[in-house]
Image 1 (cartoon, rainbow, N blue to C red):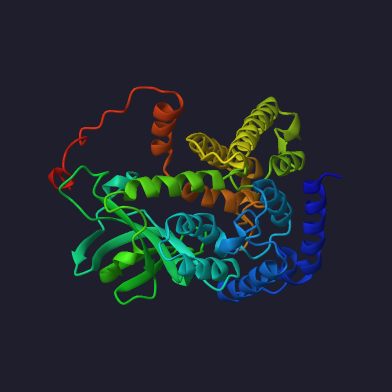
Image 2: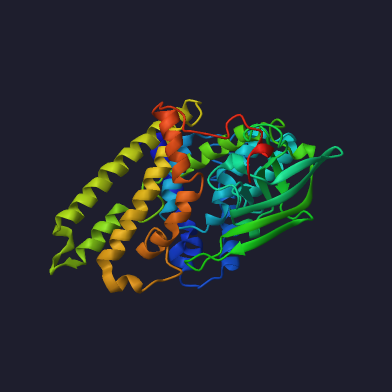
Length: 403
């Protein structure tokens, strides 16, 4: 047995030992509120940290375990099967904390934040999207103006996941409107409990409210909260998004597995015949199998590159774009096949096991981390090397672009 296989077996044994308290199967019997589930999630994260399975591939001097990406992949694959209450911490540990580790100025403070985040004691959010920005991150209008030895921030963000439970966030804002839109941005961390910060949850079609509007009314930022150079925020934001797109490494787009679709079709009929024998259904299964196998290959290649110390490339855009679109189409087909049965919607169903929940939540996945249109442009220009898209605002100062 290889070292990774041994590690995976040990991880599974630990997960099985805590599953009776934390797994989805155990929690499903308790009918918990979101707040109660979050509290249980914090307990799970603390036990996970104490057991040595938190920050697996992060350096020990910052609070991690100092192991490889392959160790983390092995643990994540096992953990996913149990449905532990870790969804509240996914964004926090996926993007803001890695960026904080990379750019945070006060290293002692950074280490304290990392450990508290790993233990589930603190949660971070990512404040990027804006109502007037559309799919263009560089079009944001939330601004921070110089104020003594710091900054004063005013504006609005939207679609911020779990902001209502967050302690800190990372944010990109406009600090110079007199230069091109990409060059006038700066990246900060922000205290979500600071005076002037207001969070308003948004109720989604599925009934949950995990995304929010966040308003900033003259919020004070110290210059020590800046991450990267003044005017260099777009580069830091791109670094964040590249990480986010590789976080989406599930070729099922975080929806149901293809095997579940096969099982679903075995139970249904088309014109009195088993749906699984219909040529259109068999074609869809074959097409999705080939596509997901291709995405898995891209993911393996990307992790091998990271294992060698290289940065994630633009291929992450392809992974996210194709996986989530595939999930939405397959979910739609499953609902069509179910007919009237599809109206039996369960608002508490698990997104990887229920076609209705998967279909309803898929549009948020097509926006998070970059909309389809943005990703298509990235693939065209950065992967295929095609000419740059027409950009009439290129070279124009941001304050000269019509609102």
